[in-house]
Image (cartoon, rainbow, N blue to C red):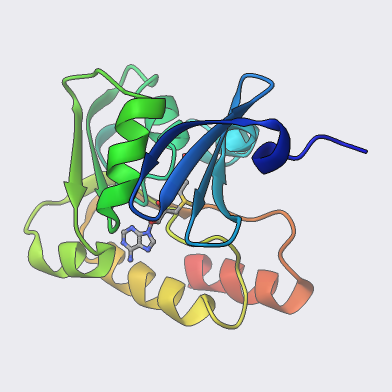
Length: 182
Ligand SMILES: C[S@@+](CC[C@H](N)C(=O)[O-])C[C@H]1O[C@@H](n2cnc3c(N)ncnc32)[C@H](O)[C@@H]1O
């Protein structure tokens, strides 16, 4: 039988409804009473492929998770700052223990991404949306709302990207892509 993070891994951080496990030197974040997996360190490869060479200047990220994407964005030398907006204080707490990022360019804010986008007057060179676990008929409307709000906070040459779950079904995939390309 293969390894399962919540059976074979070790809890290394826990706060409220969030828990981080470590297995085979890799981190896994789950939230809630069940084993609801929200982020895993293995997604770094997705971020490398999908973010390409876009992060630069003033960056905004919606959804902290394990901070894997945050850490990666901060490796780009042309990134002047990264603001990460996270809804869940428990996630902020466990991320700080399991995967602390010590970079003076990084600011983590506890807020709902949509509210932040409509309330801030800052403009960004790069915005990365990664606040959903899957792309489906339940999450696509909220992704669409977040895209609408994020576009208002982009500088004229700014770039908006959203994490693409490689397992997204055909129709959901087409809708997701059309939201970013419209
Ligand atoms: C898929 S995880 C992000 C993974 C992250 N990119 C990483 O590198 O680990 C999604 C995160 O978004 C947060 N989230 C969900 N809805 C949100 C919202 N409306 N605004 C801000 N954060 C939200 C969740 O609590 C969770 O921490």
